[in-house]
Image (cartoon, rainbow, N blue to C red; front, side, top):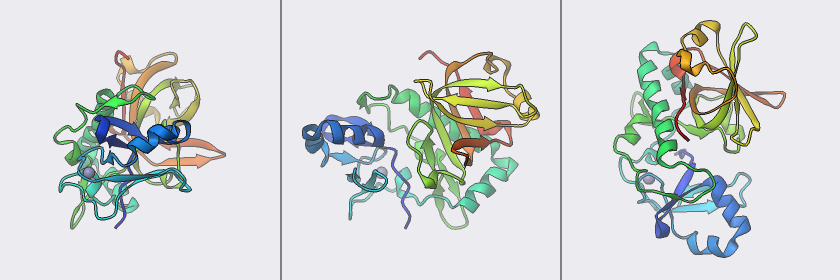
Length: 249
Ligand SMILES: [Zn+2]
């Protein structure tokens, strides 16, 4: 069975959350500390399953320890949906509300566990209904919709398949051409990707979100990321596939 990839884990001994990038950083810069926490890593959602961090793998990642199991309704207990299932789900207009709920859940998770590069407290992280909102049902079983933080390292498997991309970023509209795009930068102002759309989709964007210059905000979008000439590009087909939030940060 294919596993849904972990983006972060709970350090049970300290009741803290660490992302894969933060774990990698800790494993390299503070080996003594990493040794004290490495047997205390658990599933970020159910905390029932123990995780192993593999910093030396080709792509550093967290995996569920052998024989360790997640609680029944944990997001990570579900097999990820296939590319075909995700495309069908996206292309069915009846799912626009469901897509918006998932994108909002992603953005909510950023608020609950904010502040990159600091060890976070987990108190608010296990919200009820969280799992359900990331699932789609196929003929037989519920499948997990993959999530990906756009500020994290991208792997081959992050391209060419619909995912819930999300993150706290700096964004800037480029509407000079026929196809408007939202240019996305990290909060350190490093260019990440562009989200392209038709003029019609852009027109549906609420006017207060059509900011005139670079703006710090949270964005979430559901589509495929494509790589061309080393640049990451995503195209949304409907306004429900993109959510921008401006809040006090
Ligand atoms: Zn779990």
